[in-house]
Image (cartoon, rainbow, N blue to C red; front, side):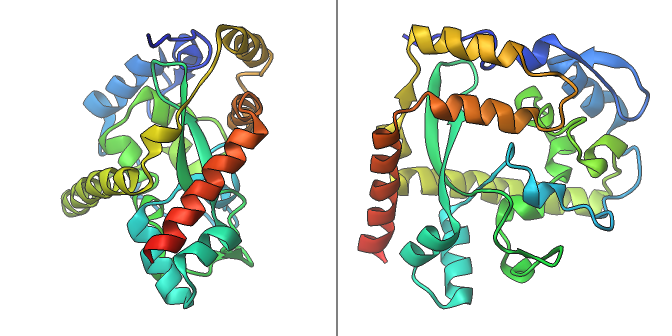
Length: 252
């Protein structure tokens, strides 16, 4: 039976956040709906701020990689997919919303190793999730995706942005591609075979630890990930990492 620990998946929704457009204070789910219904298209069009590389360096929001990303980037680097995974990638563990389950995925731990002198060294073949950030948050805002970026050092998120009709259509196409590739990637790695379920004692420990994290702490996302990661036995994490690596090496 799946259980929902109140402070593992729901604590963000119990705290109010300010709307970046009108300054109204709302809780997570209500804020997400408010942004979509009232302010979509508000603010300036998205642009990266000089010297801001928060989306490439925040360890609290590492980047999940799609199989297509691994294929494309490793080909560009002229290395095998297994070598790419060993050099640059890793296994990310994410709590499934509404459950006590942690599911693994391939990803780029942050700070990203492809960030060189403040710029992306693989920009032309960058991962799809990089191409979608942060605009996708405003097209389909969900509390569990939006909250981790709001008031966490992401200037582009806090400032809000406008989305032009032609750009919105492009983003929606990319999001549809993302969904297809997420399903393909999960099937390839068989992620569901490596899910880790937190025990009741672990849930209680996580809840207590989460309560000690300040809501205004810019690194609260990293702190939460570290707490959850420490709940997973090291030998199990190593087993999953080797299974993912073997899958890449055997197939390609």
